[in-house]
Structure formats: structure tokens, C-alpha cells
Length: 185
Figure 1 (cartoon, one colour):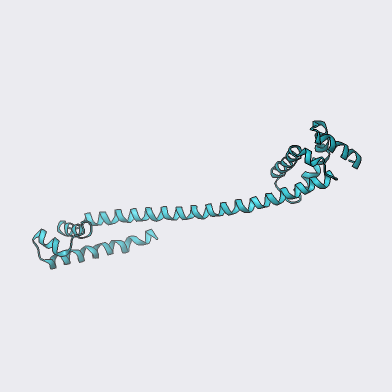
Figure 2 (tube, rainbow, N blue to C red):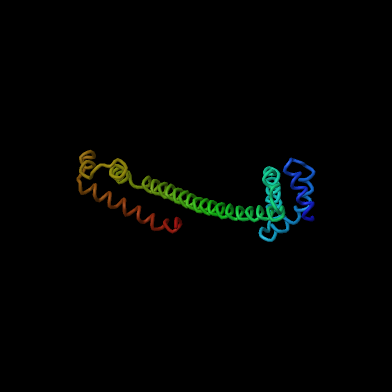
């Protein structure tokens, strides 16, 4: 498009003439898209950005109509749109990276929780399979939080017997954990 025609269409664009906008659009749209494709390889993104640029031309038509060179003004707008696109992508990538890191952390925590629950269930089964007296003493000690002396008094047994039962219960649990722990790592 020659300079004189461009200036005429810009003046008409400033007045809100749709036909002038359409002529400018048809004259420069393919150039804008080719220019954008040199920087952005996604056709859909390029089409969206080109559409946004021409939308801005229309919405700011009074200001655009005063430009000395529409082509120079238009490509300045395109350059700014490319900068904004890359800035947004950097921000988006940062957010995605944070999201993935958080997701990995959540997955790890869930896996650890499941392992802890499975291990707790395994310990409960092992405790249930202990002889009744050992089971009762161990439960009173570890789950009820009673001291060895309190347990001995409640059950009318020697404190040393309580200690022996707890020692044996812990030994039983260690054996089971030694066998099962590799499945949890």
C-alpha cells in the first residue's frame, strides 16, 4: 500500500470507518502473521496475537490514525505483543513448575501416609497375635501411656515381669519390621 492511500485510510479509521479498517486489516494481516511466526511457532498463538493486535488498532483508532506510518506503528504493537507473550510464558512456566513441584510433594506425602498406615496396620496385627498377657501389658504401656509400675500394680504382678513382657513385645515387633520394612522402602 502506498503512503498516500495509507494516510487516507488512517484518517478514515480515526473517524470509525469500518471499511478503512478492513482495507488496512487485509493489507497487513498476513504480514503481521508471518512476522509473528518468525518468533512464535504455534499457529494458534500467532492467530490469537494477530487478532489482538488488530483489535487494539480498532479500539485505539483515534490515536492510531495520528501515526505517521501505520506499518511502523503496527509492527511496534506486534513487537510489544511478542514481548508480552514471552513474559507471560515465563510466568506461566514458573507457575507450572511450582505446581508440579507441589504435586510431587503431595504425591510423596500421600505415599508416605499410606506406608505409615500400612505399617501401623501391620504393627496392630503383630500386637494382636502376641500372647494375651504380653499384648495387654504392651497395650497398657504404649497405647494407654502407663508406666511399668502402674501396670504392675493394676495387674498385681512384678515390675520386672512387666519389663520382660515389653522387651519381648518390642523384640517381636522388630523381627516383623525387619522382614517387612524392605517392602516399604
